[in-house]
Length: 212
Image (cartoon, rainbow, N blue to C red; front, side, top):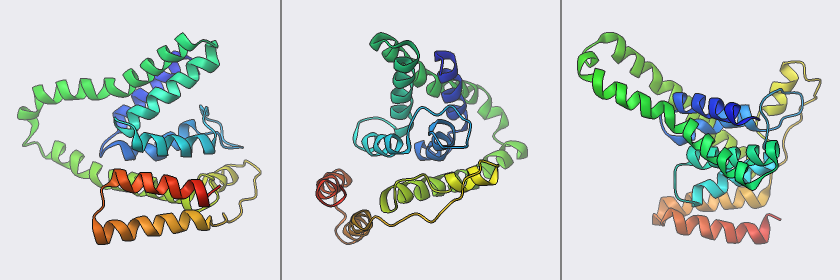
């Protein structure tokens, strides 16, 4: 990917990021993860994508911004073979993600008081909510598929097969260690309300022993 392509891809993500960073997870998976039989801007393997999501949860900053920085850095390194260009790519990816929101906030601050009673504006915002919920639900499916199952992106092979990729999809295999951690984390949160940071650290330690 060129730096211009990195900027445009993440600018598109930034424009569609209604509902928070988790809305971006299925969009990033569709555009940037390498799937056999599917043409996209793939620069991440499914394993890299899963690791990136896990690291993005534990590092400061929104998940979308962390992903933009990493993918931009990776694209700069691959396209130009330079650490300097890799850092520039990270900055370009981050700028692309933030730019649409920056522009929209300026426009909203100027026009919102004029349009707040418009039935068209209210209808647009009402229509965006269920779409955001659907994307967040898809993010949950992706997290679950890459944690509790065999690490592939859920539905990716089915999508490739549907569009003529010539692949024969099969059912993913359960990762019992991942299932144990998922269930344990849910029960711990429900009963003791443990700080999420401590829970993730504990899950990482467990994963090091039982998910290799």
